[in-house]
Length: 106
Image (tube, rainbow, N blue to C red):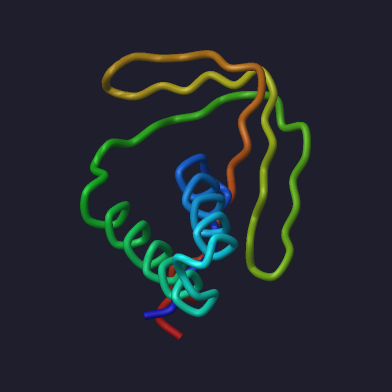
């Protein structure tokens, strides 16, 4: 299964990467094993979000920036209002990264 490395830039992904770097630096892990852990993290995040997340969110806001590069859309919204079944929240800025899931099966 192919995966994107998007989730490595999330809070949990960055913490994992930092921890793996420390473990490699101290000799606890080899760099090759650390890379395998990151690859498994990418797969697990993709599978978990695909199978476990059922809620939907609608987003309205001012489109500040948009970009399409290497089949990845990036949108930055300002003064965004996020609505879900649980309620709504207004945030100053939100970044949305969207990839074509069909690319994962190639």
